[in-house]
Length: 174
Image (cartoon, rainbow, N blue to C red; front, side):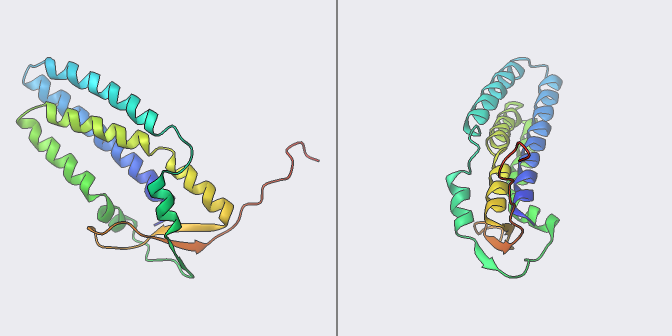
């Protein structure tokens, strides 16, 4: 799976997790007829959105992603392409956290509300990383792929030769 596709999917999965957790928190608070947690949740989500937007404001890669790209091993062939397996292998902590927070909504509706805020922060802070990695790929004429590793090991990338983008010298048509 291409690394830029993995980054896009991670952002969308975090946003989906935040949506599900927010809906569960609202339904749980409404069924318990408690309005306090709803006001708390709305305030927390607003703070989380501002914090995530602030963290993700840069158009450059974050230092961990830059290090990951620099440490990618070079290969002459594409790694195994199983997108679903790769996503489950890498994003299982998000799935477990979402399911656990949804299950704990029975105990307290604040739990999925708090977890939704963290998913919002994560999604917004990673929203520009795909574009930054794409720019690096186009500049260097390579493509980065996620290598299959154990779910408990850090993610590893493979660098494969791609096509280099040649930008026009001038924009005025001369």
